[in-house]
Image 1 (cartoon, each protein chain N blue to C red):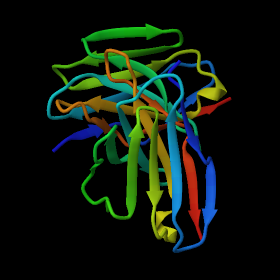
Image 2 (cartoon, helix red, strand yellow):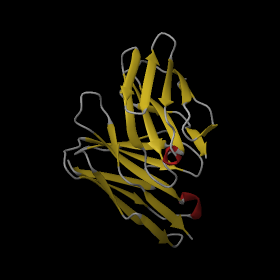
Image 3 (cartoon, rainbow over the protein chains, first blue to last red):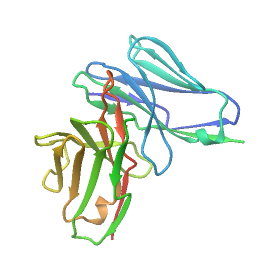
Image 4 (tube, each protein chain N blue to C red):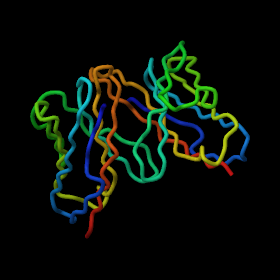
Length: 109
Length: 116
């Protein structure tokens, strides 16, 4: 079966750095997405990785290792507005998005 | 660019009535749209994939006669919840496949449905 694992909840301090991990087992791989979702709102796109390595975009970076079935989202200089759920999703061989359950990130002052 | 709208944003209805939710891609043509449902504190659950001009493909466990999907044009897909019941109360989100090279999905703002 297809499976995506990410921690249910994480807590971090304002100004700090946090890394949210995601591991996956899917039938085929055509890329991995990270989305941010604030409570009561729809997800918004953060990043896309299809090749191994690190993609940096401002305070957010995303890393992928296809051989390990592993990705992480790195958030630097955390702000209170970063409190949200972060969803990892993999595009499988049929170009279907397989979603993780999401990681709720709580930022404390 | 790549804006997706949904209407209504929220709706309250009586049990047994039908509710229609519209999803529009405002500045691009979307051959494929997706309908998701999200219960509180849970992840997105794909209900169906909608292709313009053809029948929707429903995920296992989703009743196609209860959740009617129509994708009549490249910019509009509709989801009708027929004979809604309180257990259908949820956050319904549509997305449209973008025109980028990596099949990014652009999400609408969601519709919160409450069935009394």
